[in-house]
Length: 411
Ligand code: KG4
Ligand code: ZN
Image (tube, rainbow, N blue to C red):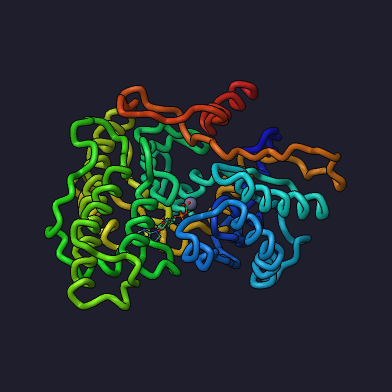
């Protein structure tokens, strides 16, 4: 969402030959891509910090920042080279400005501003979670607003009603951890190989286990809303590991066959309950959303965890029961990527939501517009959780309230 906006002339809006570079550095992946406004992906490059993740068992902001800084120039250059283009061929640069780790966001935003200033290109500041949702519109050209979106990643667990570009009604969010965090920690405690991140490791191991063998309880049963909680399930997994005397210090590959079997049972049981929680909340959210917007036809499921086949299969059943269609981007577009940023840049650019090129020399001490804590939507009254204990300090006004203010200004 840009801080200033210029309305394009109507014939510009329909011009469909835009070429946009998207840059993403909000968390642990450095990604860039070049996308055309007709939806063609000209290139896509991701440099992941999997080795750092495996070593520290999580994202350490300072180290993640360094890793981004080391590769950002190369990642962007590779994206341009693979697209057979130079910066001068671009129509605009799109970059994630939030939410995310501010040290990491800064690396991408600085790179985007340098390019935009040198080549006098407009710049589009993108909301990372809006991008996870909107990339589904690149994959499925029939996907029109309004639609629902379940966004499940390492740091976010959101279910929203997407009413229009920049306008989201938040039906539910997590009151503590996101599902991806629960996958990652469970994988770490089970001694799995984290080089592909915890989610895929649990998904693979779960195929070998008995999903009913460990009795985990489904979170928040007593709360009849659409919010999520994964902190308690994480603790249940930890306790199960301890009670079965599994030594997570011993990597999975070196454990005995019997020990490996126990770990697989925990992985499968965890996954079943983690996804059951998603299913229950989605079922209710669909009812709520249809009461608000009866014309809804689609549920988009996106974010890293949406690349999980079991998650997709279970949610497909929920959606089918409610006569909706599931839209899941391919796994490479579910996990963090530059394509979703470029595409969201294109959607915003078409509506005139972009900033003019930055000055060639930025004034000293110039404050970058970074939004580490930036809600996507306005909270649906009925969805407000009594169990909620979210910190509210230093939260940026939501994308939706900014879009609304912009529209009020223009009307
Ligand atoms: O969207 P994403 O790439 O980054 C964030 O914005 O957080 O999501 C990363 C999360 C990690 O927690 C990772 O373990 C999880 O997505 N993930 C998966 C799978 N692939 C990635 N979780 C479950 N199953 C998977 N196959
Ligand atoms: Zn993400």
